[in-house]
Length: 92
Image 1 (cartoon, helix red, strand yellow):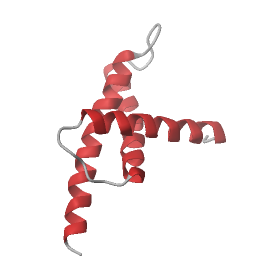
Image 2: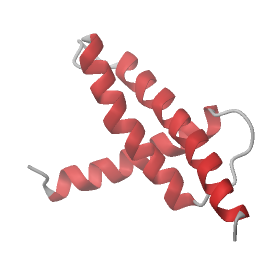
Image 3: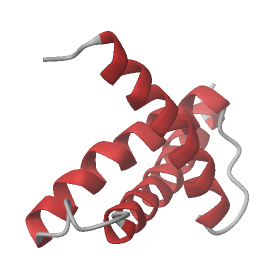
Image 4: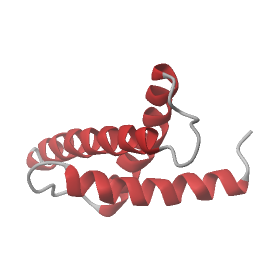
């Protein structure tokens, strides 16, 4: 069940992971900030799924491996968003 706290938490995670993903992604991405946040949200959600599949979602202490998965997925999402956004903007 989505509560107000989980939606706000997901938005905050999206902002943080989107920015980190943008910093880790190679090259310069010319995408708007809202698209960076969406890429970060995708990174948070799919990174959790990937960490669960590997069996490292919940560990003792800080879940560093899960966070690394989230940042990597966010970086991939930023690169994909930049390529798709750039392609759609060049047609107009």
